[in-house]
Length: 125
Picture (tube, one colour):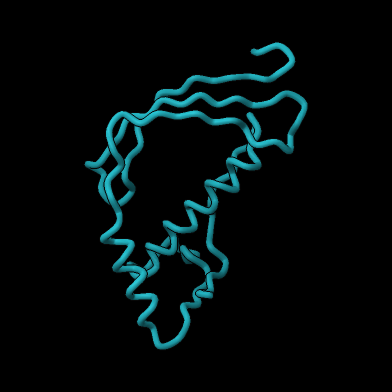
């Protein structure tokens, strides 16, 4: 506890590449939740021990595939009601995880338990 400021936590994490389980990076983080201000995102400071795997090649393949579509990408309910995600929608799911992570961070408290459940609709713009 930091008087008049909030609660600070020190964490030691291992980040794992969702698509390459053998690719991990150690991380330390400090998270400060501010007292009395539920609308303020926590302050997060982190360090990585090592480097995250480059995704440039996969990102470029996804971008090229999306750009070459005859019709704009439109999809719904990812994953479907049985938890399935088609391989061509996996990059969209990864984008949604990144977006939802930002939303969770901006709106989290010490007691929230938010996570991405399903992409209801995605449309290429």
